[in-house]
Length: 488
Image (cartoon, one colour):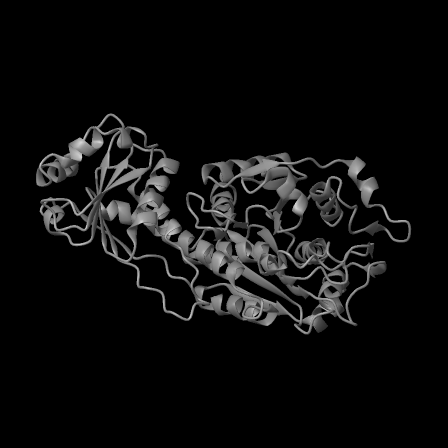
């Protein structure tokens, strides 16, 4: 697993600013005020810092952005990075400042002269998240990351505040690693093995094989995977930190590679379908974070792991399959497979664990990308309080999410002439009808959220807290939801 950059907190030491070899980071407010550490840096550089702060380049910076001074005179450092930020920055601004440090840091050690800056733990969190790089498939070993030392007025308090963020960072990295891994390296069995290894963190892990799923009647999920030589699996991860309370269930789509099956996808872009298990990756990352931070809540993560391949054994368009719930489904498009996987796992989660609420995540539809691009996940729900709680959690963590509609009118679009329901209504309202399909498998009275993360699970250009590639979107928001609504 990719290891987050090591970050240490220590007391402020003015003398270290002159002798530190590597990169030094100092902070200046928008109106050019220097703190004690900044004033020392300014004296060491014979006023160069003040001249930089009075320049048009500094004035043009936004909150949390930085400019660079190479080989500053009077200091042993290779570079001095000057970050524009308020003394009491908002969480998003502090994380953005950490991201700016991470983007410039390289392999050299970094000294962050934070002093009395508020939200220093959030700054360190932003730095750690943005410093991620997936390098497992490269033959050349990645350069070791330079250590980061954060000088603060109260290092013990900041380190304590950063403790849970370290667990969250590891959860995000785990989700990114899983979603980034190619399908020949991370198949269904390898994915299940990685999750089984989390028993050492205190999670209870159960793995259902195909025989167990057949006995349970999970024929929709099995229909997706039957064209592949890779056997399908359902992995259940249980974290019991909340006494006798009914658990929150997190359900993730884990299609380790999606060719579309007999409804074959175009060749262009198909290589990106290694990330079609992004929902399962996020669920796994959340469960890892909850275990590492010893969350005081009961949460169950369930992931359906399949590979959707064309073969003589594959499900055909027009086949009718009976779900675990009992509904019959006309599979009129084998590339609308994720909802079939989720339907049976949703049913299993409800029948087995009687959850207080369910959240499912899936890279489900291209229609979600058409509607919302790469900025927002599509949010569907049958319950106003849980939807509002999730949207508030996503906003607090800076993870874009937008509420989308559900309505009985969309049920008519997925009505089948030969079965109870069909799995695809075509292009119009494609993300909505997929959610409406899933809603048919949620029991009356069970609060439920469906998150279509097709546009946010992987991005083609850098964001504030993630390099281009797989983002781990949802780990932070779901952990916040657990804290705010389910943790005692």
